[in-house]
Length: 416
Ligand SMILES: *Cc1c(COP(=O)(O)O)cnc(C)c1O
Image 1: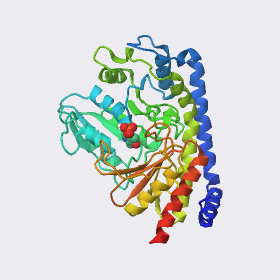
Image 2 (image 1 turned 120 degrees about the horizontal axis):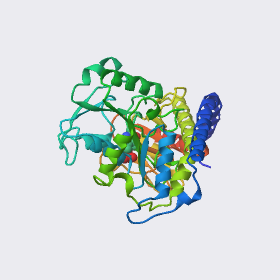
Image 3 (image 1 turned 180 degrees about the vertical axis):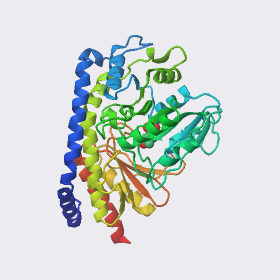
Image 4 (image 1 turned 90 degrees about the vertical axis):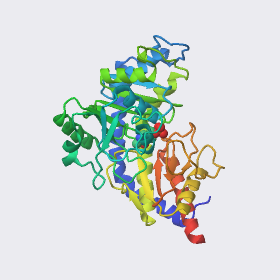
C-alpha cells in the first residue's frame, strides 16, 4: 500500500464527518430511482427495445422508447436521445442552431459560457461555423459574486432576445452551480419579462443531483451528454435534448436534415446500454456526489480552498479545488490516474484540446473515453490552477482516487 499514515488517518476523520451529509444524497438517489422505475413501467420497457437497427431505421422501437422514457423522466413533451450526438457540446449546439435564426439574439444569464460553447457562439471572434458567423447576436449578463444577477435580467432581455442560456453547472470556473430553485426563479423572471423568450438550460452534470430537473422548473428546453450523469457510466457515447415539442422538433431538423427530423437514425450501439445506464444513473450520481464531498473534506483539511465547501448543498457533481501551482495540478491528476481502472500506468500531461483555449491536463482512466461520470480530474493550465473532479462510478473508487491525489500532492510538498 502506498498511502502514508497521515492520509489514512485523514480519510477516517473525513469519512466520519461526512456521514451526516450523505443521508440527503441517498434520499435524492432513492427518489430518482423510483422516478425512473415508474417511468419504465408506464412506458412498458421490455427487452424487445434493446436491439440494434441499421440504415434509415424508420420505426426503430428501441430509439422511440428511449426518447419516450427520457421525456417522461424529465417532465418534458419530447426528447431526442441519440448516440449520433458526438458529445454534450454537439447536443447543445444542435439546440442553438436548430432554433436561432439570423438577427435573433442569444443571452447568457450565467456569464461567460463553458469553454466549448464559446467556440460554438463565436464568443471572441466569429469562428467558422459559429452562431455569430451566421448573424446570430450574443449578449451576456455577468454573474455577481458567483450568482445570477436577478435584478438586472430585465436590462438584457430586449425585443431581439429569442433565447436565454442558463448554464447549471460550474464547468471550469469557480462560480456556484445553480440549484433547481435558482433555475425556477430565473425562468419565472424571464417569462415574466418576455413570455415567449425561450429558456434553454445547459444541464451538463446536473441530472439526478436533485429531486427535479430544469424542465420541471420552467425551462423550455435543455440538453446534456450521455457520458455524463444520465448515461450512468454505461452509455458508450451520445447526447440528449428534452423540452417543448415544437423546440425539440426544430432541433431534430438540425441533427438530421429539414423534413427528416427524428424519424431516422439507427441504433448502432446496443440500446440496452442506454436503458441500463439511465436506470443506474441516480445511484451512480449519488456515488459521485459522496466522492465530491469526501474530496472537499480531505483537501479542506490539507489547507486548500474548495468549491463547494464540504457542507455546501450540491447543484452538480463537480468538485473544484484550488491547488495554486501547475506542479500540484499535474501531481493531483497523476494520483487520480494511478488508481484508475484503465490506463493506470500512464502519466497525464497537459495538451491542447479541441474547443478549449488553454492547455488542459486530465486524468482519464475511464471505460468510455472522456466519460465524466466515471472518476476523472481535469483542469486548465492557468492560474490559480484549479482542478475539477468529476464523477466516480463507485464511492469506494472515489475514496481511493482522492487518497492517491492527496498523497501525490503531499509528496510534492515534502520534496520542495
Ligand atoms: C461537459 C459540459 C459541456 C459539454 O461538453 P462535452 O465534453 O462536449 O460533452 C457543456 N457545458 C458544460 C457546463 C459542461 O460541463
